[in-house]
Image 1 (cartoon, one colour):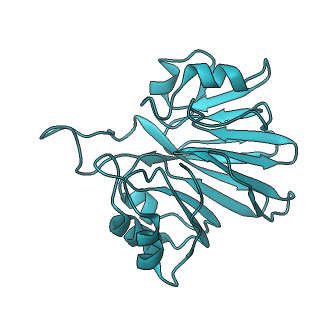
Image 2 (spheres, helix red, strand yellow; image 1 turned 135 degrees about the vertical axis):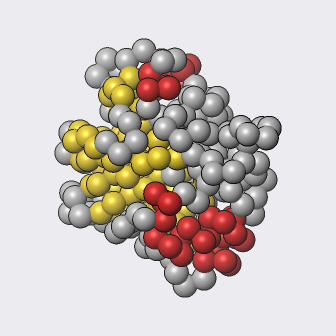
Length: 220
């Protein structure tokens, strides 16, 4: 489902934040349409073609080649980790810890991974290094998109985050209480719970308290 956007004021102009579905979102800034993990369950009819598409992981709720093809143009820039590039042609690879400058904004790839949860003993749903979270810098503001992750040391150490999109669902990522502990550690100004199917985002809001503003929007 697509909802009306919120707006983040930056020194480069407003960033329009459009929740689409589950973990799919659109950031519109200075003529750019930046999609994160576009998948088929979203509604795109009233939305622009992509100037940039960022992909976090290889799971089907993040990587949907048919929807990417629908949104891309010959000049669309695709960015993702190596695991995504192995499955989709035309992806520019960015690895955990790397940065890129792209058409007036910068992006840093942040590790996203499980610390303890997995499909079987000794296995994890998301191994460290396979997927990326992202920190986007638009002028004087920073936007963090977590991808599928637990509350990792790298997340706890984030600094100066103005807006954070934070996953929370079991068994694949983390419950609201764990997400709240991470929010209290890195203290983003605003948090949007996303990728929360099966969890109550208001639990995060209640647990965070005054540490950050939590905005619950319609993703399903």
